[in-house]
Image 1 (cartoon, helix red, strand yellow):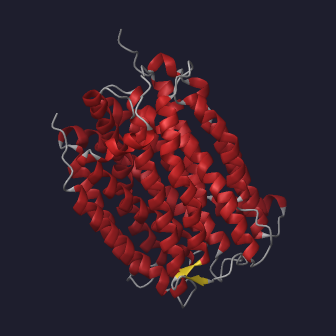
Image 2: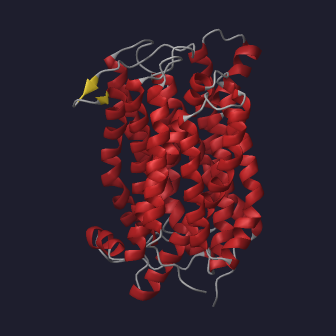
Image 3: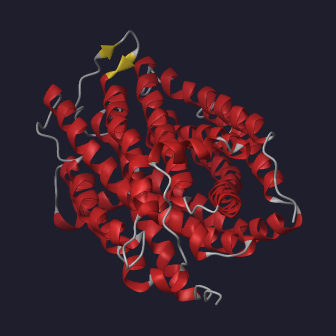
Length: 446
């Protein structure tokens, strides 16, 4: 008996889960460097010292990398637990529900340092709470994304549901980037004098909201009704090896990793680019991020149409090429023959298409890879494919933040900004690398 198609309202409920974890991960990416190593004109005190370790890495980049080591081992573990689950209520949701509260708490605690000033104690605190956050949110993300392949049954359904996912993700990006705007309101409405406290109240509120939104797929989608799953019996290490035997998956993975590293560079630097390179208020960062996301939504119908007519691969390659040119522009921000506001508008307009294409298509492509592998092997280990993908996504995000933090050594303040400009060169190189590897990807002809 064929499974019923997931109704529209339940598709939205499923996509809401992505908005929830997107808010929290984007708060970490956008706000953590700005909160702990702020530029001199931010009105915030630095919270960790600019100590150099191993010759060229500052302490914040080391902290961010260390928080991922536990996560790196945990990703395939939780995927294996999910894929092998025999729970009568489903393989995915029963695991996801336990992740929501600790992820919410740890995301908030990241921005409550032990010392209200520059201190090594804050560095150790970050190591602890970031590890808790990464492990918690991974417990939600890996089973959640594995469901994309299981809830959809045709390539068109995958692209459609992946589109709804991406809407949730970019809404999360907007809310994560609006932290300073919300903090402005809190300071005005509640007469909070401390900028740091206003940001803490903002992030606490957004974290609680995220946790509530992450509950929606669990509350409104009956996994057993829409998913026919067979627990895999492959042990964890052979399951990981099976994913890497897929040559298409390897090219996909390398391109995805380099893209998320570049995207993390841009997200981490957003507030610095706005305030230091262009001399605009930090609240403008959220406004421009919101505008970019709204413009990207305009491209969603074209992405869905273009994927059917031209294939997914040409759209992905074009998006990588355009994004590489955007990073070149970042290097010259503040020196172009336009007003600072118009320079940001140029970036926003041209970044909207890559944001749409590289948000929608990769997950739909991976769902196809995982489903094809299931047909060929007879084993349902979609979770492992998404675990490996999101392990590399998170490693890419962490590497991006670490590169950004490391480059601040060479200048992050007005008049001393060369480190910020170097992010443009790094991002350009990463996007070109992603484009080169994705040319090797072999798209299945329909």
